[in-house]
Amino acid sequence: MFGLTEGEWTAVALSLRVALVATAVSLPVAIAAAYALARWTFPGKMLLDGFLHLPLVLPPVVTGYLLLLTFGKQGIVGAFLWETFGFTFSFRWTGAALACGAMGFPLMLRAVRLSFEMIDRRLEAAAGTLGASPIWTFVLVTLPLALPGIIVGSILCFAKALGEFGATITFVSNIPGETQTIPSAIYSYTQTPGGDAGALRLTAVSVSIALIALVVSEFLNKRAQKRIAAFE
Amino acid sequence: MTSSFYRSSRHLMPGFAMALALLSVLTPLSVRAQLADGETRTVTIFAAASLKGALDSAAASYEKSSGTKAVISYAASSALAKQIEQGAPADIFISADLDWMNYLAKAALIRDASRSNLVGNTLVLIAPASSTVSLTIAKDFALAAALGDGRLAVADTKAVPAGKYAKAALEHLGVWAAVEAKTAPAENVRAALTFVAKGEAPLGIVYRSDAIADKTIKIVGEFPGDSHPPIVYPAAVTTSSKLPDAAMAFISYLKSPEGQAIFSQAGFAPAP
Image (cartoon, rainbow over all chains, first blue to last red; front, side):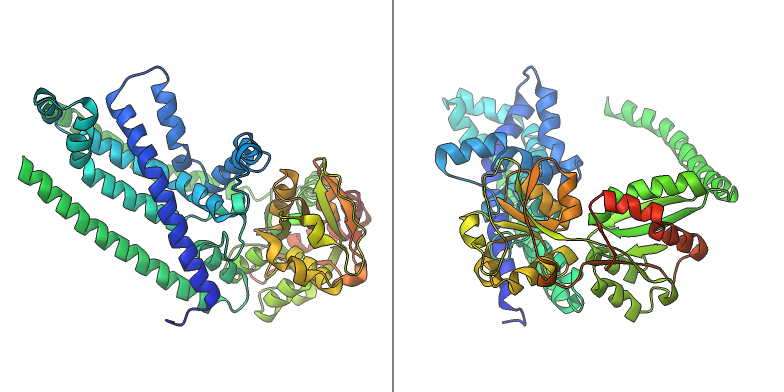
């Protein structure tokens, strides 16, 4: 279909699955971390901020290598997960999702944090005076107001996860059907003589997905902005 | 408050612009000064990942004796050949198999007169140092069983020489069909070694020269020489090289007894 081979469709489906899972799992973590960094002061705040932004500034291969050392079968966290839960990231699509999520997380964090910082605190205070508990205020006032930032952050994370290569291949290698995402498949094609046609096909798919994601995000963003404007 | 901040940053702008302009003028001048002093010639080498270590030592000792510096880029031979094809400025290309050298020869990107075989190598099966696995490599040996649910770390079997040799050896021994779905294809042979060294993969196939350098892995067995095409590292000077004589001299050094001694100490075999 569309001239793609079965192996290529597998790579596309795997890429989408990995990117969606990476974004979905990063979302609550990013919202929590962004809220903490935007609203609270605590000892070690700058260190935490720096640490969470590491994948943004480190070379992707380094991030992949660090993931290998920490979450690999013999890594600190990886060994614990394996012994206690029998769960491992080794050479599985979950490892690819972890690598892509780690790389996309800082982008989501920045966008969400920015939108939390720009919220008018008086609206939250007003909700408090009307009897809402802090948690309800967060759910009914803060989150909806931060929605544009959350949408932008999610799209950025999704796009980064879709295009992630260095960390993925270093952490979980390039296993067709399991960890061979679109970038890894394109890379394999570019390394084989006569593989340019396949590389171009997958590039076209990659560009299409990215464009669709951007259009959807613009649409959602506009709708969220309209709803916020209607409230103010 | 915002307007005074903007006003002060406007004062900084001309300063920044001047600094940037100065920098962009001075930098090419300083580079030209370095190149004008033509005493230190630098030869750029694109070499297969498995040569790292041995080639670094050879280049260091060659620099001491001749004054020619070598800048070496290590990657999978497939990646390097593709880069040279796209115009990367290498003087010398050292591949881990004949296919990729032939690929460039067909595209007339290497000087055929300068091509020669440098060294050979052997393929070995490795495991993490703490592993207790014991296998004898022979026809239909129990590789799949030894892997269990783990994966066999190899370099990409479609493009990277180490992976191609590994696949050929496993096919020859009749075990490829059983392990094909259980491989972890790494970007190059050194990445495959890392997977085994970090305990991610219980077994892997790399070159003997890679295995003896790393203390965190151990050699389980050696693949018989006739189970795969002979492992040969051809070297050649590229057609785009601006220093063909210096490059040829470097290759001659690598083939000299002194150069060959460095390679054999690192675990390479003499060129077949």
